[in-house]
Amino acid sequence: MAKQKKHPQGNIAQNKKALHDYFIEQKFEAGLALSGWEVKSLRAGKAQLVDSYVLLKDGEAWLMGSHITPLKTASTHVIADPTRTRKLLLHKRELGRLFGSVQQKGYACVALSLYWKKHLIKCEIALAKGKKEYDKRDTEKARDSDREIQRAIRSKGKED
Image (cartoon, rainbow, N blue to C red; front, side, top):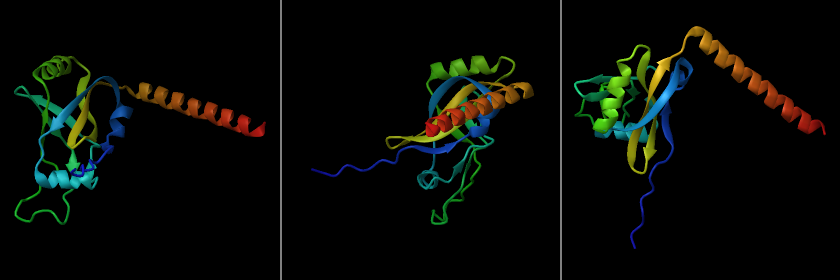
């Protein structure tokens, strides 16, 4: 019986800034069209999604602004462009839903994370609505108050 290959698991990169700047309305899972050196770099975890977004044009979705750092041991005959646009692979129905929603004012499509699903690399994208400055402050206040409550509960449990 042949040994089964171990597939990498877990997140490769997350876009925490998107969670801070947007209200997430709906999430989608998209495949990525990548070249060989990009897959090797992602196995090593060398990716950033900080200012990445999804551009919808001509009936296709493109991941813009993501940065995949090439490995030094990667192929020398291929010129690696770390910030190139990468095609997202989605069903037509999902693309139609995204196109219709992004046309509305205040909505955007952002990349949330890159992760492994068995041996494939997937990108979690989201239909999001931009937060105003006061929304960000409210979210931060709520998070701080939750932390205070958790600390109080923990400290009360230790005293008993």
